[in-house]
Length: 541
Picture (cartoon, one colour):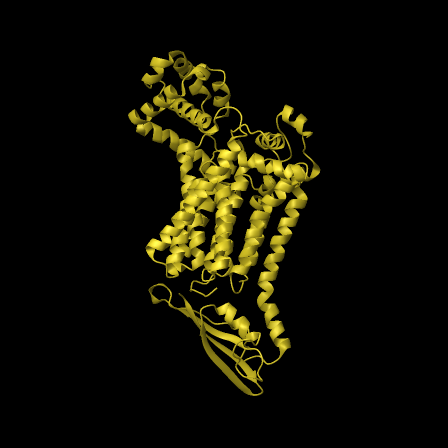
């Protein structure tokens, strides 16, 4: 258990008085003393100002110190007038107030310019699924379900967009209360964030990737709040429940989003160890929480699958991935031997050698996917295709890695960012779905403004994941050096996002910018958190 030694001071006439005490809950003790329910410095001297505090009894005997100087004058003496105290308090709170104003204004402006949101082909289909309560299964059903809930309350996507954007902006705002004193560095960082299309435009695009990123970031921020308040069991439990709720939502929103959960569990165990828990207890608690979260995800997925029609989405997606990889291999080596397909589907193999390799592109699978629907693949056994894919990888690992590297390179270093759909504006989708939903194609004056605004960043580092990966890497190094309790939550977030990015080396079939939107957001949030209090020394939060 951590304990705190603190020093209070006050001025009584011309005399200065101090009081030294210890406690296990610093904030609670200070509130009690200043409310006169605890011991006072002197019966006539009124409230005491906290001049110094030190935490001891932490891991490895470390001591974490801080000095509260808000109650001191420029020459080091204690303030004696409420007016001067009020002025200094206002000055000390000015960075926080200005940062809140910037973030709130950014959110309001983004919603005013973009509501009811921007819908692509996938968005319109998912909105239709949500309204009728039946899910096709190609995308995670939770996205369609949430769109259906919002549509039932407020026709369209406005409520969904508002709540989705509130996840990110609200979580970001909450960080201001996670530090004792906000630095002025936070203001320009917050301003830079809200001016980027990742905040001003993407938060209004109805994509599962945006929901995934927002829920993931909100989950790790809630974990950081829990870490900062770990000694308070009830509050810690509530914050951990919120954290794992958001992380579970992120895993439901993206097929490979479950990668984030083990990192959150590890951070939780590490934080518990720093607060005196044994290794067995810390990792047992974190592991149990991870298992419960996975069980909840499985239950929700099972419940939503009862409303899913058609073939299993994972099997269809795997089938497309295998077909994509095999055609990529034939594009690189037209004489590549595929004995399993030669034995079971010689006609299909002939078409793949002639047409498939010409339609193959490392940037996108769209044309190949459409062509696949017209080939004899529809009658091909999934086992045959899977066996042919597995035999190809086992016999030609070098070729497989080279093809996958080329696809992954398009995701990180696209030759033409416009081919990777950096954003969408307005409303467009399949005609039958638009008719059923009562939607019309939209490209309004506001949409044109947002298109011009986002278009200014096309071809710049703003629409490139690599700079954000570098920013995230620098933030990760800083957090691991400083290692405050809350820092561990953000470090685990950045590590999990890095592994999430690497997973696309194996599963990517297109270079869409939105797939790695979480890279941009997590890096920006981490830098904002550091800017709130950029000092390296440990502090009692």
